Length: 231
Length: 208
Image 1 (cartoon, rainbow over the protein chains, first blue to last red):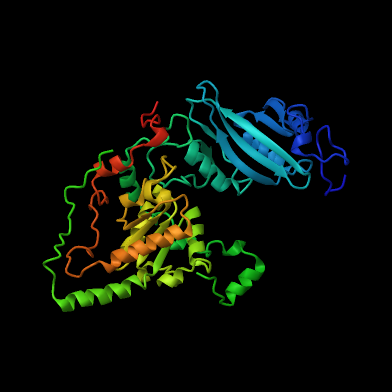
Image 2: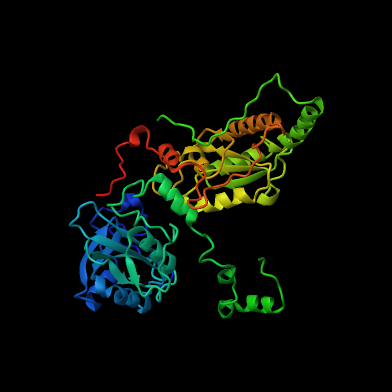
C-alpha cells in the first residue's frame, strides 16, 4: 500500500461510492485496524472497542493510557503523529464515571482513533499527561484541568487556561457547577478586578531568548545579524 | 426590579434663569463644538459587535463624517471608549485599566446587548454590563446593532458633549473606585443589576 493512499474502512470502502456521512452506518462499520493491533499488544488494558459512525472508540485502562499512546505514537505500523484534542465528558448520572478523551490522528496512514479512559466520580481524578509525547497536549490538558479539574500527572505547567489563575469557584463544566457560578455577581466582579493580568506573563517570559536554540537555522542567522523581531 | 440610586449619587442642578456670563457660555460652545466633532474612538472589540463597528468605520457608513476618522488604538490619545462585544470577567481589569489610562475628557459607549447587560450570556464567565466596571455614557441596543444604530448613539453622545458646561463641577472628575474592593458602585447595586430575568429564573445559584 502506498503511503498516500486513503484507507477507507467500512462497507462503502470501494472507489465507486465515496465515504460520506450518508453512507456510513451507525455501528456496523469494521473498526480501525489499530484496534486489533492494540488488543494484541495490550490485551488486558483494552476494555472495550466500539465503532460509532465509522469512528473507532477504544476504552482503555486509566493506568496504562500513557503507555498505550506512546506505543501508538512510536510504533512504525501505527504512527499516530497528531494529537488533535484532549477533553473530558461528565454524564448527568452520579454512578457513570467521567471520561477523558484523546483524539489521535495518523497522517501517514489516514487513520483516526478515539481513546477513552474512565475515572470514577469521587476519586482524585488523576491521569498521566501525554505532554512528553505530544507538545500539543500542553494547552489541551490545561484547558481540561481548568474546566473539569482533572489533574494530569507529569504536565510541566498545569494551571488554569481560560479562567484566571486565582479563580476560586471550582470547575465550570462539571455537572454540580451552577450556571451563574457559586458567588454573587458583586463578589465575582470584586475577585475579577483583584486579579493581576501580568502576574505570570512577564515580558521576560514572552521573549524568545530561551528558545533560541530551537529556532530554525535561517531565523537564528537573521537574529544574529541584529534583525529586529517586531517586539 | 426596583433599582435605586446609590446614596452618594450627585445630580447637577441646572437653573436656566441663573446663567453665567456671556463670555463663559460662548467659550463652552466653542470648546464643546471642537470636542464633539473630533471624538477619537478607542475600539475595544471583543465579539460580533466589533464587525458592525468596522462596517461603521468603513466607507459605506463612513464614521469620518462625524469627526471620528482616526481610530485611536492607544488609550492615551483616545476620547471615547467604544466597548463592542461581551466582556468576560478575565477582561474586567483590562478594560478598567484602559479606561483609567484615557485622559479626561473621556466618554464611553456600550455597544450591543452583551456589553450593556451581559445579553444572553447570563453565566459564570461574563460581566453583566460594563457599567459595573466603568461609567457608561451611551448604551446602543441591538444584537449586534446596525451601523445606523451606532451612528445614532454617537450623535447622542455628541449632543451630550455639546451640552456640557465648564461651570458644572464634577462632570470631569476621575472615577475613584473603592480601594479595598475596586468597585465603584455598591455591591448591592451590582447584585441587583445582575439578577436573572426573562425565562432563566429557574437557574439558581445554589450548588447541589
